[in-house]
Image (cartoon, rainbow, N blue to C red; front, side, top):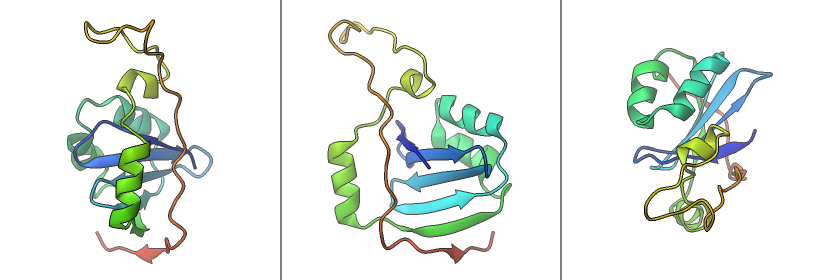
Length: 129
């Protein structure tokens, strides 16, 4: 599953597999969770939401069966923060990033989506809601 970093204080990255309808969320605290039977339109709304944490609490948490895959270590979190800065929301939504007064599109092209691999030690642990 391809994960995309997002601009959020609560959520580091999200990904979606349309074949299995699974949504994967990596939180900034390091927790990695998979949510089952998530409609594709909910995932798209999640990507476009200006507040990922609020959207997650309102539309995902407690509504879909979830499974904890594991947790990123502090070292993995630091490496990800250094290598993968948050993507502009419009780039994530596959639209061209608008130019801002401090950044022109001629000098800063949109960043491509970058995959995030799960940690090797991730394991499935059922969670109760």
